Length: 406
Image (spheres, rainbow, N blue to C red):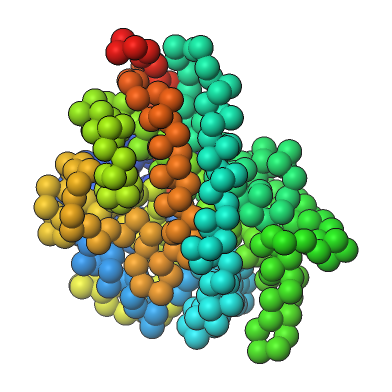
């Protein structure tokens, strides 16, 4: 997207997570801030804070007294308590505060246990093979556009019980929520109204024609003996789209980007299948896609910084994963890293409910890719582009495929 803000001069006092320098490579920025001021500030977006150490990110993630989750995506429109009232929020449970958060999460857990996720694996594997078959015979193509971005979209469409033809709409919704955060508020509201209309139609269709999918699960779910209001069903469905699509295609793309530049890791992963689960965790740590957000719930002092009620705070889990105080040689990808309590899926009670699904998709996507294309590299390193906003992953990833060793 084209950035609508002026360039950042000093990320310590004027950071912007949509700035081209951050989008291209945020790691040196976080390393610098970790040395100079582990909590950065910006007047952009109405006031925002950025802790960059593992310890500080953890403190915020576990602190539900001073921070609220009622809005987790920073934008120009900063919602007050009356706009998105706690404890439910817009997309429960990620926008819910205690104690309601635990109630909703407990209600959703059966849909995300290993058994229903395992049931999606054959579809995921067949999808990956079909996508790769469409590239057969070509020596170069864009792995982000033609492979990574399609996998979680179609898996989530399947999970929700929507039409596979609706995948393109899902992608446009994700761009609206996560990337186009600096659009004028009235334009975002108009686009969100279109999303609500689409989702309401899906809910009505599922009420008329119940089926075995997550949408019907939500419609039939109860809390304290009462079914969920349609707003909550819709919000949770949107949450699954946002939390489960861009994040996973970003992880798949970033993993392929890494393997394209590290032949030793590529060869090892292609020839040591038992290493895959450990490698997946390390790739998630090194290229964690998600930076979450909180709102300051009340004025207080945070390590000498005057946090004010309503201030935004970004929770950069990728920066926490690159903190030398928490991980040995954090900038080095070690596929067999044994001790790896990474924060790619968040920390605290809001840790990602769909982590089993994301792991399955990343593992299957890499297994199927390496089975067909064990030898590949970046076609044009400078042509790789990355998404802006709070989820980072390659949007374009041109690769050259080598066959028969060349």
